[in-house]
Image 1 (cartoon, rainbow, N blue to C red):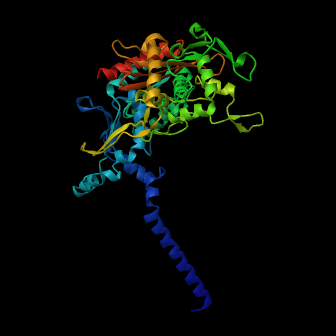
Image 2 (cartoon, rainbow, N blue to C red; image 1 turned 45 degrees about the vertical axis):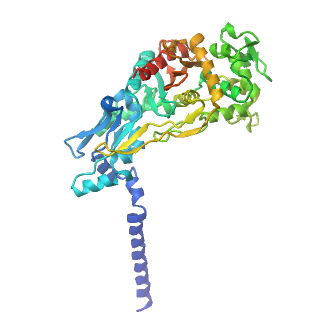
Length: 503
């Protein structure tokens, strides 16, 4: 064989080997990635044409269906239907050709039937020459609590309002209610009229009120005075004060190292805060800014940050619904030269009552309340109760998981006493339930922008001595109403707590 023919032969052999390597790589090593690629139209259409499992919540006869697939006479065979769209949309999310959000996304492998736990089911379907059916997902949400939260929040903020409610079972971390307003109808996105679906998505995505955002886990705002329970916990946990002590207060306080009226902390007219020293119970019940600002400075930013992080700030913790915004206790400040430095006294003072750069989601503040209600133990919050086969057989149940001790039982008991005082004789009285001991705290957080109304917050749990539910309410916008955490948030929290206690 002459040299040119030999060279061509070797070149062709190399091309053949490269082709074999590429085919082998695509069919074996890269097949999973290709199948999961959202741009793979064939895979997306095959998944969209499958009988997807149901999303359920509730127990026994109270169980309801939040999402299901019904027979449909077109090439895709099934249409995704959401029977209670607005009340649950920000939890269930929606399914479209090639994409999912909410539980539809986080539990997609179960709902689509591709999860390894459904392997036996797939084998049976194959043996019976039936199409692969998806598994079901049972959520932790309590239908009565969810309805109470949705109805109370909607009636408070109105159809143009914005806000969120989260309720947690303190001993387990089960999320009992998760509401976000404004909401939307996922049925309009799941339609097989893809042009209409795209138009609906574009409209919702362009809406300034962001209805597609789950405010419970994706919106973080200044928590305002609800953060005072974190400051109180830090002060008691570090031996600075006890619940029965007198604490420094005062009508006004010029924060150390500052000058000018912009750095003066006051109590917004609450005269019970004016003495230089007041009972700790009064400081909490009357929500005295000066008292908690001074506590925070006495503790220092490191201890304040450490306590906040024990409650869940600066971390992720919800594993079965995404995306989640981290709640923040600032790790540093920026000096005049642009370098990262520790918070100074003025900044630390502001964090003591949930301002400066402290940011929290409603879920985070519900977790703070739940940890105190659980005598200091923080449980991981979760939404998925069970994974089931298409025939409703339980394949896996979520076990409650302890994240960490946030505070000692003694500290939790003392903060609870302060919060009960706040409901019985203080600003949180709108959450009082006859015959039930309720612990609560109000919050009205300034936005830092002149002329704009504040944010309203409310956190609570009940019964205070052995809590079954902890609640956080966040009111972002309530057109036509004066926003105050106690007046607006308290009745919402009360409605949710009563729904659980009377269930």
